[in-house]
Length: 390
Image (cartoon, rainbow, N blue to C red; front, side, top):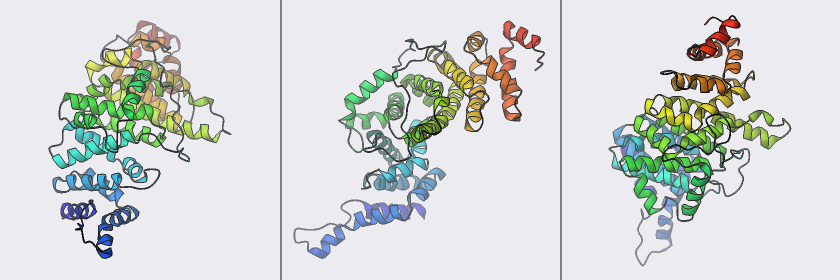
């Protein structure tokens, strides 16, 4: 029933739903304008949210039609700030589409609509005007984080640093229309390893280049949501996401003045991004073949930085350091190759502070990481001297 209703709305909203011949009079002209009016009515009546909820259910009968109608609403939105697209992304449509595309949905209509949505968002990744209260991403896109926590130029096989990726993305930006260039559409829509790589690249491009903080966070959360899939995780790492995560995690959010409203706004989005970035590192680290890339491209150094910067601080900063500490477990857990490097990165002191926290969750995760680090003799000796038994 839902699928039929959505299909009908999509048919009525599509351009050309009301055809006119050469002798069309004024009445017929009004009929021709009906699809545009219907689009306006559907968006102002709040249909975007229910459509995304229907997409999340994944019902075969309604999935394709719902995505097609949503894309029609996004594409024909006449608001200056692309409000329909932002509402759809905020409601989780981008994450759902990323999951469908990485999985290779068997529904051709759903697959095509999701391709178009991703490419549309990529083409509109920058605001035409500064959005009030959105904050401006302040990540230093050209910085590479070395494995020792310092700036470095080391790179993993096949990955690009953020600065080079931005140059590549800027070179093709002018050729992207409302649904992306034909070549980009062909690549992102391919149900293959190349298609997954193209999709990962588009998502990374959005994060690196957007000046919309909420969009950056939504794309980062979409990456987090697809990361449990091995093919998706491998595509994201190969596209170069680890260096971006390392930069996000390494931003010092404690330097913002309380009187600086723009700075406070930017800090809020960065903290959200840091928590999602740490969670994404943890999920990527579950894939044993990716751990070396994660460490060599700066994820361990980024997690250590987040622990040090947020040590002893309340609120969402506490959640960032808890998530960062938890991400160390899969990264360090199976062998001892990176234990000494983690200690050298400065994780020990903030973990000891966390161990004495009044928050049970914080103390528990700190104890778990310290037990892993205690396999290193120097750590076990230091804990013994402090009288700490885990």
